[in-house]
Length: 311
Image (cartoon, rainbow, N blue to C red; front, side, top):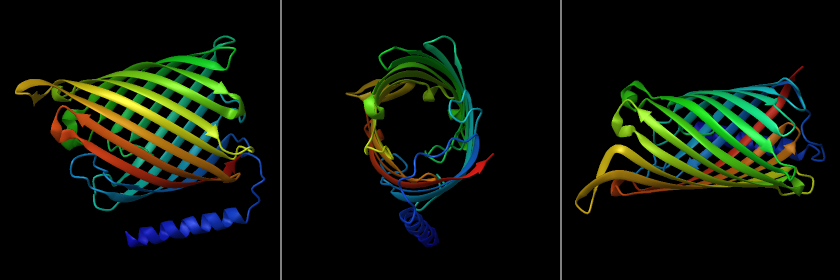
């Protein structure tokens, strides 16, 4: 782990030094059809296992990505693939190699209606999460664009979740539906409200649950030249289990959890091919099962290089 820390510190120092020697008056990155990216993320989580044990861990996640757009400026078809290596101290549970594939197809159905179809495969999560299971998602979204910079969308998805063999009883179909409304303002600012309802149907009925997720997101540039972005997000997700019970006042009742998440993300363009990002996430879960409470704080630093363009 000491060697990993040395590598991380050296990379950060080198990246900042190179960026400082580069003129920052360059405009946004040139539009490309094919390109390769590299990313190095470091993070510290005060409770990485999200339970009462409160295991803190420091992690290093290098990743490599391949990207394609059929049109450099207004793509209708997009493909992104990323492979990441996750290494943490204090626990081996989240050490893994993850693969993430996302394909998106957009089609304008009329002047104001746009269709968006997304296919996503993640094996052992992605470079930006702590999932160790596999997900296969097919989502269809329809968006209506009002003349007042307001966008209203409805979406539905079919999702398969597959866990390691030792947790095979948690394998499930977790389909969801939802809607969101986005309001855009001058200066590239926007606010978005999302509602999602999902029903998890697992091999083991004890893992069946209903969940509702409410998300409020606000994003804005922080400089006149718009070379940095701030995104703030708040999520509230109550979950009720169908076949898992707990004792409350000597009576068996269905287990119910409430989860609150607040996340703030700051990204700055140091030069056309180099981004640096800082992230903080606060997460808290309460439950009528007193053994399921937890609180965590996660801090992250990420450098992304988009240097290699393929013509």
